[in-house]
Image (tube, rainbow, N blue to C red; front, side, top):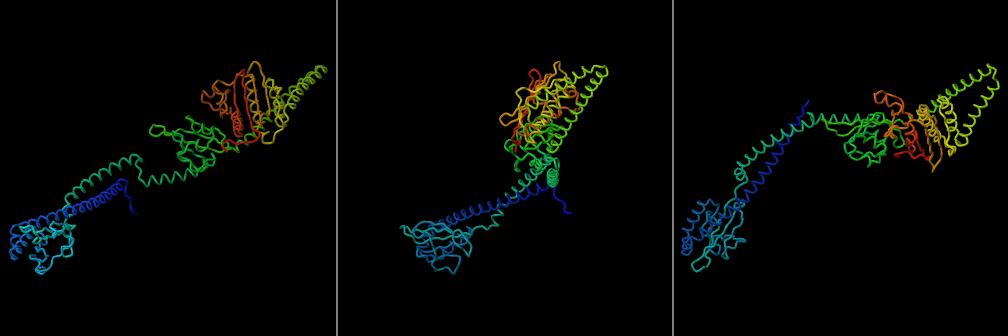
Length: 533
């Protein structure tokens, strides 16, 4: 199996490739610049050679005397000494008098676009044996100023290899410096990257990311990661489904995603949250939140979400069953005590007192039942309140209905929710009132602006200041303050949490206050408007 290069090796190889590419580019530019400068230089040298020969007095005298032999010698000497490819001397009629090529003697020299025949020197480029060459022409003047002829000089351009050879020392210097800098830089970068990636190679990092994604999206619980600014950094499919948010949630804040206020508060809380129940998008979610840190610095939080909507329904049914059971137990206990009292009176021969006792307890029960049925038309809620009277009597608490109460019959689902809310609030109130000097609980029910309002007051000690919202969290109970301070677990406080979930899930609310005891006010809309939906 072929072994992959390490990160340092990959960076070094990449750096070498970059250095080579840059070097080739530098070489190309250098050769191009050298060629351009060489062409300009050869053109100037050709012009110097042509003007030097044309301006020589011996050249003018030889052309006046038609001393062709001297001109040929002078032209050849000039060509040899200057290293030119060709030196030609011709008359004004372009007839060649001197040249290194015997075949050109006596022929007419092509001047092309040159301006030499009008008395001006000229430089340009012309072909010499098929290769480009620098060309220069200079006029030869007579003593009277007339043009007797001209001198034409051609010099070959240096080749690309010549230019490359000339630039080689500099290129080698550049290559050495670039290679040294590249290798050192690659090693430093690789070392820094290694430190930042905890010594993992790219393939290992890729494997970890793939495994993390597979595990994250395979978990049946929702997982949400947030940074310190409240932006989503990690989320799986189950969390997207439970929170009912768009799939492109990464990098966006909870407010931008439309997450409900209560869920936002729970996700952004700075504390550790354990098994906190929150209503969101028509569901009851239980979340566990844990702040996370890296190298001692906080970087955000991670929260797991579990759907407990069905569990809430079961809890609600179980709670109703518990209310019925407790009520039946209280009634059985109450009836047993009263039967014992009646039997004792009869054994003592106090038959008339026994009859009066029966009438007295019957009238008391009848008065409360009539008050309940007159104010509450919903059978489930009315039956619950009548049954709670037995529990209140067992605890020595006076349970009464507010005179202004008026509740019509409700649909089955709302009736069940209202009964659960009333049962839990009354139980909580009776527990608080049973420890007070004056023991009473008052229940007010009404339908106001399409919302069922439940108000339960008691004569207990009240909710401690600052805990008006905390009492609705699961596991928080004012009756277990001592146990909470000692870190002991308790199942109390679940009733108020259930009340809060039922109210918020329907789009309502529940609040607590302490003025002359405790007052709990719950509202449940008639038309269900699931929070976050």
